[in-house]
Length: 417
Ligand code: EPZ
Image 1 (cartoon, rainbow, N blue to C red):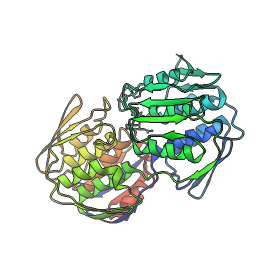
Image 2: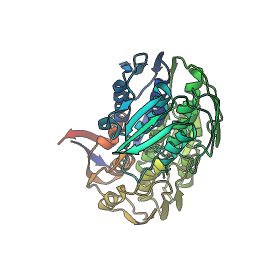
Image 3: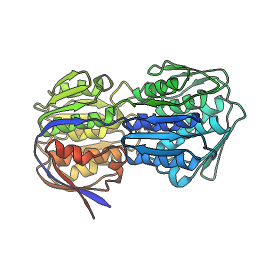
């Protein structure tokens, strides 16, 4: 196991380059199974979730290799339709292999997916969506089995705009017979990226980014090269780090349009923010409390930035109510923040934060990906020495996290324990 040792209390200055979006790359890797031609994903982050997904592709018989920052995938020899539980339970995104694998082979077998322990995370919307497309889905013994002679396009109405379910249905429908229309689809930028990627392969998908996505099934998808959208959650994490620590930071390869709600909140607490092309500049201000932060599906406040925002609220002037509307247990970082001197009370899906001047260094433990990032930000802003343990959570979604923070002036180092 590894931990960070952090000497907090220093402002951040400088520029940081944002990685390609984890939650865009993962569905693109699933889409690579839809063709037997060569796929190249440029600027592919070597984070644990991506490496696990690459492992799943290998189990299916795809050949994969990194050439510098490019990931090259060749699925010509893919022949296995079963994803081993050892890999499936490592990450949530294994579940949307169902759509692409059953499309490719007519069959798919996968153990229930893993991922961050932030709630029940059911997959009923995924499975019912596949059933609407004519896929026979059975569950038992911890496995999901799918089979279908020919996927038929249909109308699929989602009870909730689920990101993964929207992606799974797009993947299954891309080569279906006829047209599929997804209503109440998720509108996240990563879904637009999946649409653009599959259309580059020869697909016919329209409307991603809106609540209605239309997929005209095609007979064949070819190879392509693609650079994924930048990671709005990593960018938001560094913006919040800057707001917490003080100083001036610029983000490169960032897309302000995909972060408008966070930028609105940061301006509300008196940060000065400018954007130009693929850059975002932030200078922190007095940190006036944002009063209310409610997570909601895109384009609302992203649930993946709730934990970092809660850490920021802990050192704002005044009180903030944080409401987590998407996941049932996404406040595991709060008890650790309290160990650092934060004043937070959680009731159900709401956290009531009373701002304190600053946090004090402490030994804290990461409980999930974004909570671990939040605790790291809290530690680099706190007075004194901290450790953050169980970095495997952070490594799932942030490439070179401590290296990038050190480049901005934070005193942080990783040690093995
Ligand atoms: C994706 O998860 C992201 N993961 C999550 O990011 C992100 O938090 C989430 O979308 C919301 O934006 C990836 O893209 C790999 P959902 P996903 O389906 O697809 C309920 C991170 O930190 N639901 O939109 O699992 C579910 O319980 C991760 O990078 C059902 O009820 O999210 C939740 O309440 C964490 N039935 C809500 O929908 C289903 O079949 C949103 O889930 C599916 C979901």
